[in-house]
Amino acid sequence: MKINHLVVISFLFLIGCNSSNEKKETKTAKAVDTRAATPVKKTQEAGLILPVVDSLRESEQYCCVLSPESGFTVYDKPGGKAIGILKREINKDDDQSPYGLYFISENRKQLIDTEEYKEIGYDLFAINYNDMVTGYVRVFDSRKSYWLQMDEINRKGFKTVSWMEHLLKERTTVLGYYANEPGLKLRKEPNSNSEVIRTIRGDLLEIKLSEKVFGQWCKANVIKYKEHPCNTELSESENTVEQTEGWLKIIDDNGEPNIWSYSKGC
Image (cartoon, rainbow, N blue to C red; front, side, top):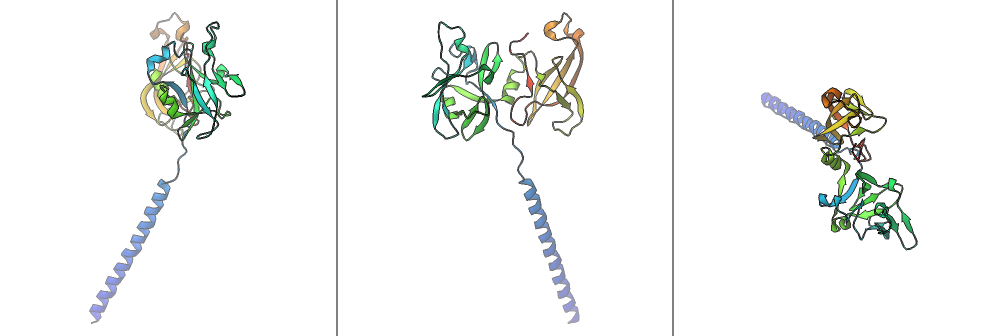
C-alpha cells in the first residue's frame, strides 16, 4: 500500500509540474502575440493625379496641367460637402492660360499658384496629393482642406499614383535623380541604423534607381561625375569618377520624395 501511495503522489506531482509549465508557455505566447500587435508607424500617402492612359499626358486635351476639361469637385473634408470645382479655363487669346488651374466656388474664382502643383515634364504639370483618407485625397498644400473624391478621379479617366511608383516608372526616362538638400545617406541595408557608405549631395552625384524596393527604400547606383553631364565635353568614361551601390530612403515619412530631377532635361 505504501508503494501505491508513493506512485499516486509522484503522478500528481508530475501533473502539477506539467500544468505549471503549460501556464508559463501560455503567458509567453500571449506576450509574443502582444508584441506582434504593436502598431507600426505608417507612411503617409502622397503622390500625383495622372491620366489612366499614359500617352494622354502629351495630349493637347490635357495641356498643360493634367486635369479633365470638366474639372474635379472639391470637398471640405472626406465625405463632406462640395465647396467648389478645380478646373482649367482655356482662353485662346492667352497662350499662358493652359498653365492655369482655378478653384471656383459660388463666391470666388481663385487662380492656384503654379508652385502648388508639380512639374513632371517639359512644361507639363500634375496635381499632387499629400494625404489619402477613406476614398478621398487632399491636394496641394497640406494646410488647405481641398479634398477630391477618388471615385470621381477614376470616372474621369485619371488615377492616383504614389511618388514611389512614379519615381520608379520615370527612372529610365529622366536624366537622373539627385538628393534633396541637405543630402541623403547611402546605406548598406534598407534601414536607418545600417552602416553609412557615403553622403549623397549635389548634382554631381547622380542616382540611378533599381527595381529593388523595401518600404520607403530603393537600391540605387550612385555615379560621381567630374562635371555635370549637361555641361561637359568629356566622354562618359572620362567624366565618371566612381560608382557606388547601396540603399537610399527615397520617400520620406510624409510620403513625399527625397529626390528630384531636371524635369526639362539638359
